[in-house]
Image (cartoon, rainbow, N blue to C red):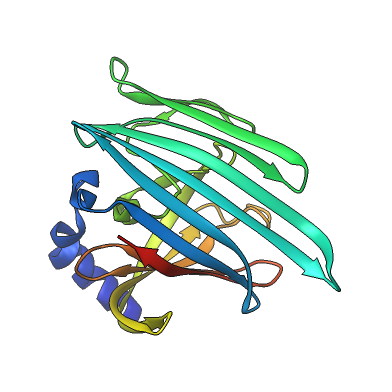
Length: 227
């Protein structure tokens, strides 16, 4: 009941405080996250924000390795590029090597039809222009009815629950955050495809501070550096 009341209060009174566009991050140039599995550091994820006039390009790179007795059991690498013009999403592309399995996605905004055209390894077709890329750095994702997989283009319909305001400590620094839980709307999905992720955003700057989910181990993204 408490969570339900918090959600109602948030969406009726606080949503305007969260709303906006990528221009909200105009002073942000770099984000870096450490990636942990079962509290062991296994990799890193970085975002570079490149501004050219009214254009914004975000270059992302993520990699991790899971080892046991110094033997690599799982190797992951992904690189992506996200583009905006005048604060509006224009395009996204990524390539991922998921333990030697190649995945990709290319997304283009079709302003004439007011849709997003998706060409991905899991989905090809058109989707709502209101859906958002699941790259987590952009807090607008809390308002989207669906996110698009940044790995394969799969459309993931989502429920977003505002858990509450929390003070969390990451890398010896304490942040005042807004805590959200993202879950799949489609309960018929197999467990490996279901979304169940907790995200924390800084209350003032809306910078993504932390993410956590449980899938074949407990995973966390923890903010390491921003500038």
